[in-house]
Amino acid sequence: MTRNFLKITGIASMMIFAVSCKENPNEVDATEAETEAMATEAAVTYTVDTAASEIMWEGSKVGGTHTGTIDLKSGMVQVNGETVESGEFIVDMTSITVTDLEGESAMSLKAHLEGTAEGKETDFFNTPEYPEAKFVVTGLNGNTLEGNLTLKDVTKNVSFPVSVSYDGDKMMLTSEEFTIDRTDWGIVYGSASLTDTVKDKAISDDMKLKVNLVATK
Image 1 (tube, rainbow, N blue to C red):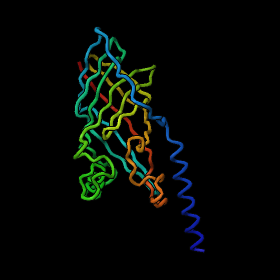
Image 2: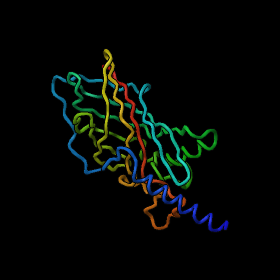
Image 3: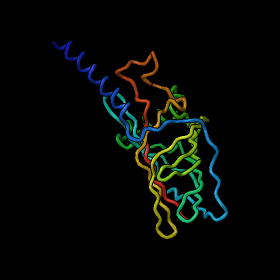
Image 4: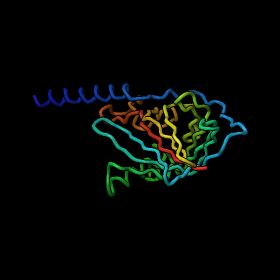
């Protein structure tokens, strides 16, 4: 009976994992890079306040999730009236934090994600070789921001819902939670799509992100 119970539990975990991978909100379709947006002469430049801005992330595997943040290194947005016309943001991939763990466990996961742990350099983001990621705006259609996202020298165009508001000289851009497939950028470690991955130890290809950006002119 114990053996049957474990077998049923394993099957249930697999089903939950498979369903969760298909039901993520605002799942992004990564497409070929597009031409970056150009601002008009009337546009005003807002500079990103890196201390007040962050990207929140969530990754999952069978049996649990991990969460954390990533800092912006620099960035600017060009705005005409209250319309975003163009922008470029540099992400500091060496700033990854883990918020659901503490102490050595958090530092160990951070080192694995950043690729600073010996023997795990290329598993995820390999920050010694690729310390930065970049997002360049290619358009804003209604409340959908479109842009080229570059990770590890791979560039794909993505789009996700955002809200933009203004308070004096300050602009706030906040995205809804959206999901990218890390394998679109060649990050395949632990993916269930690999034949040598043990399925009940697989790491989801989906990575949830939420952007909170503050910029001033």
